[in-house]
Image 1 (tube, rainbow, N blue to C red):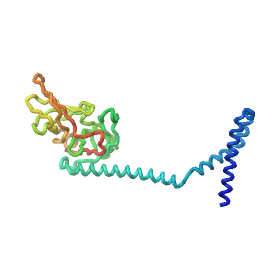
Image 2 (cartoon, helix red, strand yellow):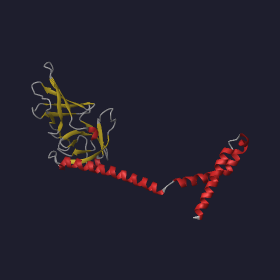
Image 3 (cartoon, one colour):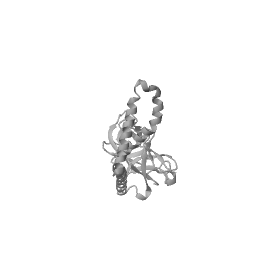
Image 4 (cartoon, rainbow, N blue to C red):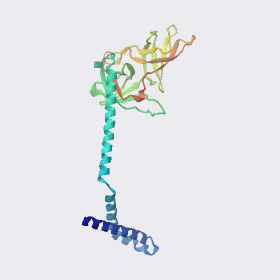
Length: 262
């Protein structure tokens, strides 16, 4: 107890000296010697500063901060696990595509996507050549088509989304069986084009994939691309066009599934 009191006296003494030196050498008369004396007393000032910091720190508070950071990390990790498990349950409750055809992948980035400014055009996933992912493989969520693999590296792959202006796929409508080509328009938009005038298109009808590619890679038939929002049919045109909207929100996807074979 006596040692603690002595430390307090020393601390007060050093603090008083530091304050006195600071204000004293602000006076013009002491300017010529201020640097010399400050060099002498700088160790004292440094010691005072370190003691002050030592008194200001509380080990219990620091421990609580560390525990809060750790708890926050665990909450985030648990949220990811819950989200992934839900995605798996949702996917595996679907009979098509079959689960043995699918490779689960996590979305790790969405290049050029800025929330509130634009919509995703591509996604990057954490599966690549080491996982037997190949260019041209379809990517789905439940029975909805997300897009297809555009580029592959050792540990990652890029998906071109169905809404991308460089994406197209042969399609047909669910109810009327009208055939055409779904083309991405960019900005989250899709159209069903190249539908001959004699075929019927209906608002709210689903648009499905017709199937294309080989056994190892490609887009299997009967995957949902979206639903028809409106139809533009002009008798003077060769084809009619329908505006289509995907049923998925690509900006919120965290887990997707690569179709490993048709």
